[in-house]
Length: 343
Image 1 (cartoon, helix red, strand yellow):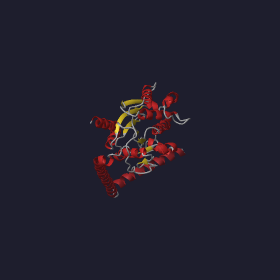
Image 2 (spheres, rainbow, N blue to C red):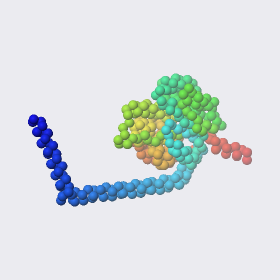
Image 3 (cartoon, rainbow, N blue to C red):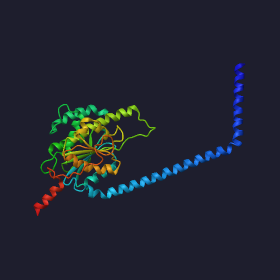
């Protein structure tokens, strides 16, 4: 009986509250409350319009800035890599437009792109780790110089890729061992690379193009399993970068440094890699791609640097470096020499 009376009183109180709310809403409080809500809605609309205008202005300024940089690029980059030949290594998920623009900037700096290879998922797949370890031991005999004793399989494979693209005879052609290494990497049981553009000559240097950032939004948290897999793949990419950087005259890795799971961040956070591999971040921005040939010139001169706006960057822009002619003639120099001899 007590419970019934309790529930009855509660129901009566609820209905009284509803009735009071209706009366107040239809009475003297209705107009001020309505005016207040209308004012808040108008303020929100004004904020939205203001933010939209600011965004449009920002995008217009960015387009103007990029147009300016694009037009001055030939004069800014010209002769930085005159006579050099460069091979391009593309990592999985790299943006095709970024790759094309990096190649354009290298050519504007006077370099010749000798070839382009695409690294496959098998290079970093945790499921093929045993195969890669065995394969690294098999190709070790073709490397000259070979990595230090006890080198990680990923570093050995990276060195193999770098030498396959840069080891050349005095006439600039790839050595027999370099051709063999490239063939082994392409035709392995689980091919580690694919030929996008077969190298016609040995390159003086190498540029590794990594993907844009995989940063998630504030409400998107990657699953722990996904993070673990990405970290495993990232470790293999860092090892690849270290191996490639040990070959040729110089190497630059260009990518993103927006999160810890981006390659440039990982290279800079690795003590050994940071001392051996030159990096540029902000690949999604024109400024980042324009830095590539300048950073490569610095690396060829013997100085490792990290450029851009990401964490651990040593400078925003690479310093101005103009290189002496390469020790091994590039394709353009050979053609010029042949023309002079014929004359």
